[in-house]
Length: 202
Image (cartoon, rainbow, N blue to C red; front, top):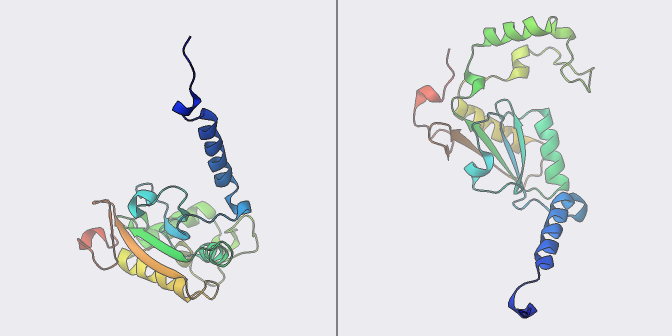
């Protein structure tokens, strides 16, 4: 009968215990005060072609990610950024916009006509189901939609909106990049390769 020398191998339960502890830390990181690995918030477009973690060279769980149409800094982005920078140790925000964005894909009037056809009386429409009294006031519908004419200028503008917000600490680092869907790489705004893929089609 073969002998069992426990010194020859690691006890399997030690690996299982470590894995259980890791999952517990992951699931309860807020309660345990464990920050995201990079103390980073990423604001990006919801376009499915942008692999956020791969593009930034990070892993899932390294950053908080906020995605919306166009990667625009809206009131809710400011709300989320204010909470994470003031209460969750986040000290850096990266904005990612991208070439060939759907927010450059149609002229203003086509967007206006499509939304008005769907919503009917836009002035009476609720823009947020949880805040039925919220309206855009005297602003134009397209101010709410936030279409884009130039992705480089748009990216730079989103960075400034975050930097200028009174709710975000002054020592928060805010940077912006354009993801090129044709190359799969990030670049800084205004370091464009081709004008026709970075500007809105009329």
